[in-house]
Amino acid sequence: MFDRKKFIESSLKESADTKILMLEKCFDDISKCTDLIVNASGKGKKIMFIGNGGSAADSQHLATEFMIRLSHDIERPAIAAIALTTDTSNLTAGGNDIGFENVFSRNVEGLGNEGDILICISTSGNSPNIIKAAETAKKKKIITIGFLGKNNGGKLKAICDASIIIPSENTQRIQEGHITVGHILCESVERELFG
Image (cartoon, rainbow, N blue to C red):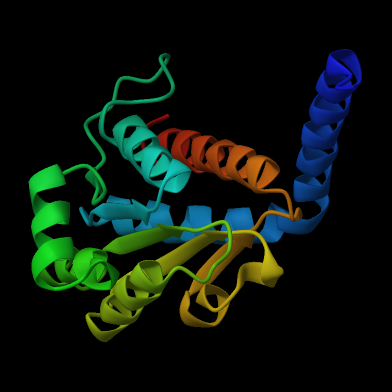
């Protein structure tokens, strides 16, 4: 029989333990990614986010935090950011006409410029459409950052310029780690550029 109390307790403990591991294992990578975004945003470059499923939702969430603001004690201009996951006409036309594996790559090709940032959110690091987009970004001299997890970052780790690999094999914990890292990056960028 399902033990709800035990499940809630173990889920919260696992989430907390993952965050502590992130502090131990991800600190330098988070700092490196902060530097990349501060440098690009300071030069007026844009940040593009991509992901599938829950990672698509995280893309939209984090792009909004950069565009609008996260820290309410700082008055700042918009930081150029866009989720390439939100235009249903674009995504469905691309999926139908050029294949779903090409939808993000096509948008990076059309919207990305040298020096921009592409944040690739993938719990497995092996999503074909994310991999193709990262490869297109590299050709255009767009900086690639991976928010990764399982399989030690999967195939994306070798493609991205920098990666933050959440130290868990549990998809839920990885996704929680990704949103935490995204908030840390956004608030750090706000404070370093405008605080």
